[in-house]
Image (cartoon, rainbow, N blue to C red; front, side, top):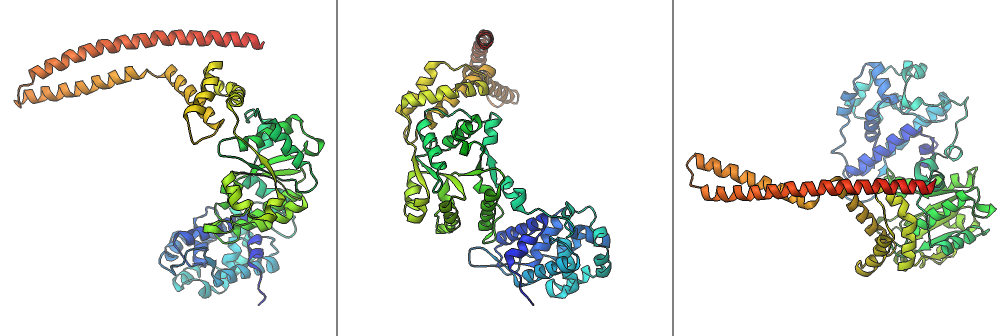
Length: 505
């Protein structure tokens, strides 16, 4: 029999069926299985609502719960060696038989779980246990083959036509992988969801110069954590939307790659690399030019399979060198020296953009640009002294972190504290309420003991009652002062809002 490459088989799977296979691999990994077996795939197909297999079993009058109970895989072939499990030979053979049946006999362009089940029913004793085989014998294989569409009507795997008489768009044509694994920063800029980027004009100009080159047009932003490496890319997106870039970059889309989403569900070895190749291909054939932003690039590039790391540097190097893939990477100095600088071939593909820590004056300018954002978010008014204090005091007293990140955190915390004080009682009032509640509980306990003759507590009760009266009077006074101050603050805020509205008009 002619063997079909496993990657081709996986590519031919319907997206819902492919998701079942990914879930089957994840189940096998969670159970420390040595192989991804037919039973794993069937279990996940049974757990998928409106799957072909569920509908076929319902049509045949077979309860899928009975089949699921017989497909117990918790105690089979435990693997002692850590790593990725492989597809079992029987599972590969079943997928191959299913694809031959789907393409040659049924004229399908994609392999569905229902066709996989139909292939299994031809020789059920080969693929599943005898008990499962006997239960599945209730399915009339000939009728299923003759009226397959009728048996699986309403299936989630029937979305879109998979017959050869219709054109089925490939992921590269539809941009499916880009939609799944990237986030559009230029669209965020158009929608006003990005904060302004200040004091980074030189770095952004250098990025634009590098991106405008014909070859080796890939900046790598290097700087310590918190200096604003990701903000440079957001600043570039804002410039693209505002049209403040050369014509060569005016119509590009800046997409941020989500490495977490790409790694999720990629339990089978080679699945992550396949997804990354698909993303690269969609970037190349995209109708609009695309620039790919990879944050924390050291986790993707040059990790060299160390401690289970993913190494796709050999996939990305040729595309970077030819200028087919324009990429902006970002990483810290330590990771750059550890992974990228040691690889001479890789470091030549990238052009370094050094991002240093801004001084206190520059951090203050950055905070001025963010002032309106935090005023709107917290409903407070931020004056100039607060901006200067956040920058200078964070630089003086917070060590181990970089400006402007730590100054922004200080400003954000101060705004949150002020906003909380506008809506909740001050801490002194809360402390008084807590002490009154505690004294009330002690009074109740002592009175209870006195009633049943467990000691004489009159002296302590008198002391507690006197303290309670004093603190209750203090609490009433504090609450009155707080309410009076709150009314004054609200009036001041309303007047300032009117003044600002008048100035804007």
